[in-house]
Image (cartoon, rainbow, N blue to C red; front, side):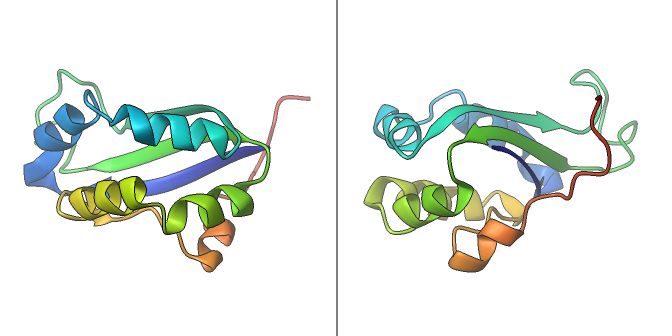
Length: 116
């Protein structure tokens, strides 16, 4: 299944957020794959060369992931120590965080249209 999510990085923490994602713990990426994820891409609104003013202060992040079962993924990662630590560090950088609770499975962006 394909899931799209929306989070927001704090305007003054964009560089730190991007730097953190260049060093995602290998233990976490293994756990994410073991939980059924085959791909996960995060995109930030606006050109990487655009200044914050040119982006209009937008700090939106859009995640697209492919997984077997999103609810299962959340359940497996919610209390996993490496993920708990990662989410705590991300919480310092984000205004809107990824919801790993049971209700988080319904937090995906709804599909409006797909190419037939």
